[in-house]
Length: 415
Image (cartoon, rainbow, N blue to C red):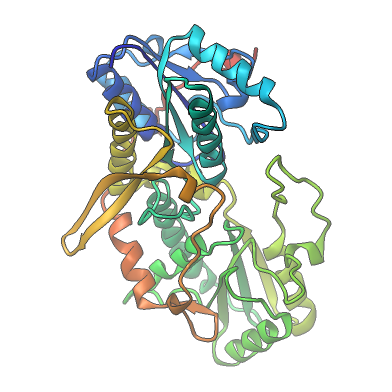
């Protein structure tokens, strides 16, 4: 590389997103980039010329290893939707003037579906204006819903956390008995795709029965049917554990969580903030069946649990970061790095690049034939797909018994 690289992080943080950042930084330096800039709060921050020289904060191999083990977004994130080019050309003129000022050869954006929309629009504008900066998407999302890639970095670690947490919740649920039984409902992230919720099945083993019911957003949720299934389970056992996606909907298209409270917050991409599904269902079951109920939201814990990260996930996240820089250096633009599974046994995966126009604003849902038991569980094919992605551990660097992270001074997040 002859000029500079700039990298940003966007969307929901994960336990692996900083490993991709480490891969971008290390590969860019190794390929001769003069400087590697980091956008503070993604493209939204870049519009305000809020960026830093990463070499001031990543100064050694130890820093790279710490960064790989640090959850959340080292550079800060955003949910900023670029306007269509014909609607507001001034935004693009401003962004590209900043890129020219910084002498940027490659623009790498680490994120999910909405972030790939940003790469698509920026690469389109570059073609339209003959600009020579190259734009590459680096996949990141615990939701695992990006098209054309076998899976996304961040998902494996979140799935491992969910499977482990479900097993511990199930174990805990058998400790006490209640006259009419105990029903524990665990709410897991996933708006329209049930990849995360399906990972609850990983808890099932010879020492654990796994959750009794699993509800994914790909299947319409029926409240009366749910009540009947829980009632029948309570006739056979004293404790019932259910995994539900935050995004399950009733036949009228309404999110189940909206039955319990108003969902007011909507982000720039039109996504409603979903929360309260488990609470609503727990209150409903308690009222209808008189059972003791518990509602558990894994919430941000499932995406921030770097102490339980998958080694496979962290290594692949690092690889896709490096592959993004390599693709830009070799002349690609308007592309996203994808992971292609070669083999399950032994597990092998390789990187490639695909046209971001075929990825942005699309969602990969769980295949219907991987959802079974009348929409209340996932199949062995689902479990076999996920299992290789959660293998291995990457121990945190411990200081006084607590993991040490690599961070920039918090005042740098503000401008």
